Image (cartoon, rainbow, N blue to C red; front, top):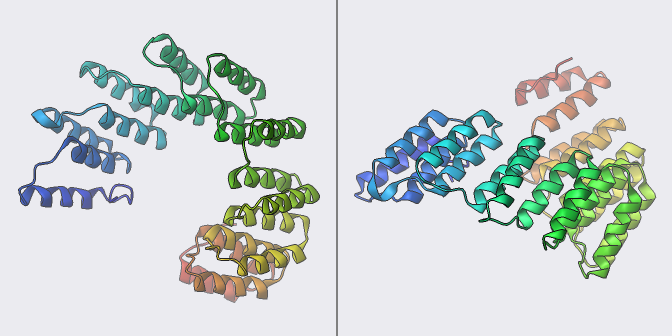
Amino acid sequence: MLGKCKQPNQATLLFELMLSDGLSPTVDIYTALVGAYASSGHFNKAFSIVNDMKSIEDCKPDGFTYSILIKSCIKLQCFDMIELILNEMLQSGIEFSAVTYNILIDGYGKAKRFEQMEKLLTEMTRSGKFIPDIFTFNSVIGAYGGCGMIKEMEKRFDDFKEIGLEPDIMTYNILIKSYGKSGNYKKMGSVMEFMNKRFFSPTVVTYNIIIEIYGKAGNIEKMDEVFLRMKHQGLKPNSITYSSLVSAYSKAGILGKVDSIIRQVQNTDLVLDTTFFNCIINAYGNAGDIERMMELFSAMEGNGCKPDNITFATIIHACRAHGMMDTVKNLESTSGWKLIG
Protein backbone atom coordinates (compact mmCIF):
# COMPACT_ATOMS: atom_id res chain seq x y z
CA MET A 1 0.00 0.00 0.00
CA LEU A 2 2.86 2.41 0.76
CA GLY A 3 4.33 1.57 -2.64
CA LYS A 4 1.03 2.31 -4.39
CA CYS A 5 0.91 5.62 -2.55
CA LYS A 6 4.41 6.42 -3.89
CA GLN A 7 6.02 6.29 -0.44
CA PRO A 8 8.97 3.90 -0.89
CA ASN A 9 10.99 5.45 1.93
CA GLN A 10 8.16 4.84 4.37
CA ALA A 11 7.93 1.28 3.04
CA THR A 12 11.64 0.83 3.87
CA LEU A 13 11.08 2.15 7.41
CA LEU A 14 8.28 -0.38 7.85
CA PHE A 15 10.55 -3.12 6.49
CA GLU A 16 13.28 -2.15 8.96
CA LEU A 17 10.76 -2.04 11.81
CA MET A 18 9.74 -5.58 10.93
CA LEU A 19 13.38 -6.68 11.12
CA SER A 20 13.87 -4.95 14.48
CA ASP A 21 10.85 -6.85 15.81
CA GLY A 22 12.64 -10.08 14.97
CA LEU A 23 10.46 -11.03 12.01
CA SER A 24 12.13 -12.68 9.02
CA PRO A 25 11.15 -11.28 5.59
CA THR A 26 9.81 -13.60 2.90
CA VAL A 27 10.12 -13.45 -0.89
CA ASP A 28 6.72 -11.73 -1.03
CA ILE A 29 7.77 -9.00 1.43
CA TYR A 30 11.01 -8.35 -0.44
CA THR A 31 9.05 -8.27 -3.71
CA ALA A 32 6.61 -5.74 -2.23
CA LEU A 33 9.58 -3.54 -1.32
CA VAL A 34 10.99 -3.91 -4.85
CA GLY A 35 7.59 -2.87 -6.22
CA ALA A 36 7.43 0.14 -3.89
CA TYR A 37 10.63 1.57 -5.38
CA ALA A 38 10.02 0.45 -8.97
CA SER A 39 6.53 1.96 -9.14
CA SER A 40 8.04 5.31 -8.12
CA GLY A 41 10.72 5.05 -10.81
CA HIS A 42 13.58 4.35 -8.38
CA PHE A 43 14.92 1.44 -10.41
CA ASN A 44 18.48 1.56 -9.05
CA LYS A 45 17.15 0.97 -5.55
CA ALA A 46 14.73 -1.68 -6.78
CA PHE A 47 17.53 -3.59 -8.54
CA SER A 48 19.72 -3.21 -5.45
CA ILE A 49 17.05 -4.97 -3.38
CA VAL A 50 16.81 -7.73 -6.01
CA ASN A 51 20.58 -8.25 -5.73
CA ASP A 52 20.25 -8.43 -1.94
CA MET A 53 17.56 -11.09 -2.36
CA LYS A 54 19.93 -13.25 -4.40
CA SER A 55 22.25 -13.66 -1.41
CA ILE A 56 19.44 -14.86 0.89
CA GLU A 57 18.71 -18.57 0.50
CA ASP A 58 14.97 -18.49 1.14
CA CYS A 59 14.33 -15.12 -0.51
CA LYS A 60 15.73 -15.43 -4.01
CA PRO A 61 13.81 -13.36 -6.61
CA ASP A 62 11.22 -15.33 -8.54
CA GLY A 63 9.07 -14.79 -11.59
CA PHE A 64 6.66 -12.60 -9.64
CA THR A 65 9.49 -10.34 -8.48
CA TYR A 66 10.59 -9.75 -12.06
CA SER A 67 6.99 -9.34 -13.23
CA ILE A 68 6.62 -6.44 -10.78
CA LEU A 69 9.73 -4.82 -12.27
CA ILE A 70 8.49 -5.34 -15.84
CA LYS A 71 5.06 -3.85 -15.02
CA SER A 72 6.69 -0.77 -13.52
CA CYS A 73 8.95 -0.31 -16.55
CA ILE A 74 5.95 -0.52 -18.86
CA LYS A 75 3.89 1.89 -16.78
CA LEU A 76 6.71 4.44 -16.70
CA GLN A 77 7.57 3.89 -20.40
CA CYS A 78 11.09 2.65 -19.52
CA PHE A 79 11.13 0.05 -22.30
CA ASP A 80 14.92 0.07 -22.64
CA MET A 81 15.17 -1.53 -19.19
CA ILE A 82 12.89 -4.45 -20.00
CA GLU A 83 15.57 -6.25 -22.05
CA LEU A 84 17.94 -6.05 -19.07
CA ILE A 85 15.31 -7.59 -16.80
CA LEU A 86 14.55 -10.40 -19.25
CA ASN A 87 18.26 -11.19 -19.62
CA GLU A 88 18.67 -11.28 -15.85
CA MET A 89 15.74 -13.67 -15.59
CA LEU A 90 17.38 -16.02 -18.08
CA GLN A 91 20.73 -15.83 -16.29
CA SER A 92 18.99 -16.62 -13.01
CA GLY A 93 17.33 -19.66 -14.56
CA ILE A 94 13.84 -18.21 -14.23
CA GLU A 95 11.72 -19.22 -17.20
CA PHE A 96 9.08 -17.04 -18.78
CA SER A 97 5.53 -17.87 -17.78
CA ALA A 98 2.24 -17.16 -19.54
CA VAL A 99 1.84 -14.24 -17.13
CA THR A 100 5.21 -12.78 -18.22
CA TYR A 101 4.24 -12.99 -21.89
CA ASN A 102 0.82 -11.45 -21.25
CA ILE A 103 2.27 -8.54 -19.27
CA LEU A 104 4.74 -7.81 -22.07
CA ILE A 105 2.22 -8.24 -24.91
CA ASP A 106 -0.29 -5.97 -23.15
CA GLY A 107 2.38 -3.38 -22.34
CA TYR A 108 3.87 -3.22 -25.83
CA GLY A 109 0.38 -3.14 -27.35
CA LYS A 110 -0.76 -0.19 -25.24
CA ALA A 111 2.48 1.61 -26.12
CA LYS A 112 1.75 1.00 -29.84
CA ARG A 113 4.94 -1.04 -30.19
CA PHE A 114 3.21 -3.50 -32.46
CA GLU A 115 6.34 -5.13 -33.89
CA GLN A 116 7.54 -6.11 -30.42
CA MET A 117 4.04 -7.18 -29.43
CA GLU A 118 3.73 -9.47 -32.46
CA LYS A 119 7.23 -10.87 -31.91
CA LEU A 120 6.35 -11.89 -28.36
CA LEU A 121 3.00 -13.31 -29.44
CA THR A 122 4.77 -15.48 -32.05
CA GLU A 123 7.39 -16.54 -29.50
CA MET A 124 4.68 -17.42 -26.99
CA THR A 125 2.76 -19.50 -29.51
CA ARG A 126 5.83 -21.33 -30.84
CA SER A 127 7.22 -22.12 -27.40
CA GLY A 128 4.95 -25.14 -27.14
CA LYS A 129 4.54 -24.44 -23.43
CA PHE A 130 2.04 -21.61 -23.46
CA ILE A 131 -1.20 -21.04 -25.30
CA PRO A 132 -2.61 -17.53 -25.70
CA ASP A 133 -5.57 -17.02 -23.38
CA ILE A 134 -8.43 -14.54 -23.20
CA PHE A 135 -6.13 -11.94 -21.64
CA THR A 136 -3.79 -12.25 -24.63
CA PHE A 137 -6.79 -12.12 -26.98
CA ASN A 138 -8.16 -8.89 -25.47
CA SER A 139 -4.75 -7.22 -25.16
CA VAL A 140 -3.92 -7.71 -28.84
CA ILE A 141 -7.26 -6.76 -30.38
CA GLY A 142 -7.52 -3.87 -27.91
CA ALA A 143 -4.12 -2.56 -28.99
CA TYR A 144 -5.08 -2.54 -32.67
CA GLY A 145 -8.67 -1.42 -32.16
CA GLY A 146 -7.68 1.45 -29.89
CA CYS A 147 -5.49 2.86 -32.68
CA GLY A 148 -8.17 2.51 -35.32
CA MET A 149 -6.33 -0.38 -37.01
CA ILE A 150 -9.59 -2.21 -37.68
CA LYS A 151 -8.31 -4.66 -40.32
CA GLU A 152 -5.50 -5.82 -38.04
CA MET A 153 -7.95 -6.11 -35.14
CA GLU A 154 -10.36 -8.22 -37.19
CA LYS A 155 -7.57 -10.46 -38.48
CA ARG A 156 -6.30 -11.17 -34.97
CA PHE A 157 -9.87 -11.72 -33.78
CA ASP A 158 -10.28 -14.45 -36.41
CA ASP A 159 -6.83 -15.90 -35.60
CA PHE A 160 -7.68 -16.29 -31.93
CA LYS A 161 -11.06 -17.80 -32.75
CA GLU A 162 -9.32 -20.38 -34.97
CA ILE A 163 -7.23 -21.66 -32.07
CA GLY A 164 -10.35 -22.16 -29.98
CA LEU A 165 -10.49 -18.96 -27.93
CA GLU A 166 -13.98 -17.63 -27.29
CA PRO A 167 -14.64 -13.91 -26.75
CA ASP A 168 -15.86 -12.68 -23.37
CA ILE A 169 -17.77 -9.52 -22.47
CA MET A 170 -14.54 -7.49 -22.45
CA THR A 171 -13.77 -8.64 -25.99
CA TYR A 172 -17.15 -7.44 -27.21
CA ASN A 173 -16.73 -4.13 -25.40
CA ILE A 174 -13.37 -3.66 -27.14
CA LEU A 175 -14.96 -4.36 -30.53
CA ILE A 176 -17.86 -1.97 -29.87
CA LYS A 177 -15.52 0.81 -28.77
CA SER A 178 -13.14 0.27 -31.70
CA TYR A 179 -15.88 0.26 -34.33
CA GLY A 180 -17.60 3.22 -32.69
CA LYS A 181 -14.45 5.35 -32.52
CA SER A 182 -13.78 4.65 -36.20
CA GLY A 183 -17.34 5.68 -37.09
CA ASN A 184 -18.41 2.22 -38.20
CA TYR A 185 -21.76 2.21 -36.42
CA LYS A 186 -23.12 -0.62 -38.57
CA LYS A 187 -20.47 -3.05 -37.34
CA MET A 188 -20.89 -1.73 -33.81
CA GLY A 189 -24.58 -2.61 -34.03
CA SER A 190 -23.74 -6.02 -35.45
CA VAL A 191 -21.60 -6.80 -32.42
CA MET A 192 -24.51 -5.87 -30.14
CA GLU A 193 -26.84 -8.16 -32.12
CA PHE A 194 -24.30 -10.98 -31.98
CA MET A 195 -24.01 -10.54 -28.21
CA ASN A 196 -27.77 -10.88 -27.84
CA LYS A 197 -27.79 -14.07 -29.91
CA ARG A 198 -25.04 -15.53 -27.73
CA PHE A 199 -26.84 -14.44 -24.55
CA PHE A 200 -24.16 -11.92 -23.59
CA SER A 201 -26.00 -9.20 -21.71
CA PRO A 202 -24.53 -5.71 -22.16
CA THR A 203 -23.06 -4.36 -18.92
CA VAL A 204 -22.90 -0.80 -17.58
CA VAL A 205 -19.44 -0.60 -19.21
CA THR A 206 -20.93 -1.60 -22.58
CA TYR A 207 -23.60 1.08 -22.40
CA ASN A 208 -21.13 3.69 -21.18
CA ILE A 209 -18.97 3.03 -24.24
CA ILE A 210 -21.90 3.43 -26.64
CA ILE A 211 -23.24 6.54 -24.88
CA GLU A 212 -19.79 8.14 -25.04
CA ILE A 213 -19.40 7.27 -28.74
CA TYR A 214 -22.77 8.76 -29.77
CA GLY A 215 -22.23 11.74 -27.47
CA LYS A 216 -18.86 12.62 -28.96
CA ALA A 217 -20.33 12.23 -32.44
CA GLY A 218 -23.07 14.72 -31.53
CA ASN A 219 -25.84 12.17 -32.10
CA ILE A 220 -27.91 13.22 -29.06
CA GLU A 221 -31.05 11.40 -30.15
CA LYS A 222 -29.28 8.06 -30.44
CA MET A 223 -27.37 8.66 -27.20
CA ASP A 224 -30.63 9.34 -25.31
CA GLU A 225 -32.17 6.22 -26.83
CA VAL A 226 -29.28 4.06 -25.58
CA PHE A 227 -29.42 5.68 -22.12
CA LEU A 228 -33.16 4.95 -21.88
CA ARG A 229 -32.58 1.34 -22.96
CA MET A 230 -29.87 1.01 -20.32
CA LYS A 231 -32.27 2.07 -17.56
CA HIS A 232 -35.09 -0.13 -18.91
CA GLN A 233 -32.78 -3.12 -18.64
CA GLY A 234 -32.34 -2.39 -14.95
CA LEU A 235 -28.74 -1.24 -15.20
CA LYS A 236 -27.75 1.55 -12.84
CA PRO A 237 -25.97 4.49 -14.52
CA ASN A 238 -22.75 5.55 -12.80
CA SER A 239 -20.66 8.71 -12.71
CA ILE A 240 -19.07 7.84 -16.07
CA THR A 241 -22.51 7.54 -17.68
CA TYR A 242 -23.67 10.91 -16.41
CA SER A 243 -20.35 12.61 -17.23
CA SER A 244 -20.64 11.46 -20.86
CA LEU A 245 -24.23 12.72 -21.07
CA VAL A 246 -23.35 16.11 -19.57
CA SER A 247 -20.36 16.53 -21.92
CA ALA A 248 -22.52 15.74 -24.96
CA TYR A 249 -25.37 18.07 -23.90
CA SER A 250 -22.89 20.85 -23.13
CA LYS A 251 -21.21 20.48 -26.52
CA ALA A 252 -24.62 20.59 -28.22
CA GLY A 253 -25.63 23.66 -26.19
CA ILE A 254 -28.59 21.90 -24.52
CA LEU A 255 -28.14 23.27 -21.01
CA GLY A 256 -31.69 22.28 -19.98
CA LYS A 257 -30.67 18.63 -20.33
CA VAL A 258 -27.68 19.25 -18.06
CA ASP A 259 -30.09 20.58 -15.41
CA SER A 260 -32.16 17.43 -15.86
CA ILE A 261 -29.11 15.19 -15.32
CA ILE A 262 -28.17 17.05 -12.13
CA ARG A 263 -31.71 16.55 -10.77
CA GLN A 264 -31.59 12.85 -11.67
CA VAL A 265 -28.27 12.41 -9.89
CA GLN A 266 -29.53 14.24 -6.79
CA ASN A 267 -32.39 11.73 -6.55
CA THR A 268 -30.03 8.73 -6.52
CA ASP A 269 -27.57 7.28 -4.03
CA LEU A 270 -24.75 7.74 -6.54
CA VAL A 271 -21.46 8.82 -5.01
CA LEU A 272 -20.33 11.75 -7.13
CA ASP A 273 -16.70 12.14 -8.10
CA THR A 274 -14.40 14.92 -9.28
CA THR A 275 -14.79 13.95 -12.95
CA PHE A 276 -18.58 14.45 -12.85
CA PHE A 277 -18.29 17.83 -11.14
CA ASN A 278 -15.67 18.90 -13.66
CA CYS A 279 -18.11 18.09 -16.46
CA ILE A 280 -21.01 20.08 -15.02
CA ILE A 281 -18.75 22.99 -14.02
CA ASN A 282 -17.39 23.05 -17.57
CA ALA A 283 -20.92 22.95 -19.01
CA TYR A 284 -22.04 26.07 -17.15
CA GLY A 285 -18.68 27.79 -17.63
CA ASN A 286 -18.92 27.35 -21.40
CA ALA A 287 -22.49 28.63 -21.33
CA GLY A 288 -21.38 31.76 -19.47
CA ASP A 289 -23.46 30.99 -16.37
CA ILE A 290 -20.68 31.87 -13.92
CA GLU A 291 -23.00 32.10 -10.92
CA ARG A 292 -24.25 28.54 -11.40
CA MET A 293 -20.71 27.35 -12.11
CA MET A 294 -19.47 28.74 -8.77
CA GLU A 295 -22.47 27.22 -6.96
CA LEU A 296 -21.46 23.81 -8.31
CA PHE A 297 -17.86 24.45 -7.31
CA SER A 298 -19.03 25.01 -3.72
CA ALA A 299 -21.28 21.94 -3.93
CA MET A 300 -18.31 19.92 -5.14
CA GLU A 301 -16.33 20.65 -1.99
CA GLY A 302 -19.47 20.07 0.10
CA ASN A 303 -19.73 16.57 -1.41
CA GLY A 304 -16.15 15.79 -0.39
CA CYS A 305 -14.83 15.92 -3.96
CA LYS A 306 -11.39 17.46 -4.16
CA PRO A 307 -10.93 19.93 -7.04
CA ASP A 308 -8.05 19.09 -9.37
CA ASN A 309 -6.11 20.99 -12.04
CA ILE A 310 -8.94 20.50 -14.55
CA THR A 311 -11.42 22.07 -12.11
CA PHE A 312 -9.29 25.16 -11.54
CA ALA A 313 -8.32 25.52 -15.20
CA THR A 314 -12.00 25.38 -16.22
CA ILE A 315 -13.14 27.95 -13.67
CA ILE A 316 -10.20 30.32 -14.22
CA HIS A 317 -10.71 30.18 -18.01
CA ALA A 318 -14.44 30.97 -17.67
CA CYS A 319 -13.84 33.80 -15.19
CA ARG A 320 -11.13 35.34 -17.37
CA ALA A 321 -13.44 35.24 -20.39
CA HIS A 322 -15.94 37.34 -18.42
CA GLY A 323 -13.37 39.77 -17.03
CA MET A 324 -13.64 38.51 -13.45
CA MET A 325 -9.96 39.05 -12.71
CA ASP A 326 -10.37 39.39 -8.93
CA THR A 327 -11.92 35.92 -8.81
CA VAL A 328 -9.11 34.61 -11.04
CA LYS A 329 -6.42 36.05 -8.75
CA ASN A 330 -8.16 34.65 -5.68
CA LEU A 331 -8.40 31.16 -7.23
CA GLU A 332 -4.80 31.24 -8.41
CA SER A 333 -3.56 32.23 -4.96
CA THR A 334 -5.65 29.66 -3.06
CA SER A 335 -5.11 26.78 -5.50
CA GLY A 336 -1.50 27.50 -6.45
CA TRP A 337 -2.58 26.82 -10.05
CA LYS A 338 -2.08 29.29 -12.88
CA LEU A 339 -3.57 29.17 -16.37
CA ILE A 340 -0.89 29.87 -18.94
CA GLY A 341 -1.76 32.06 -21.94
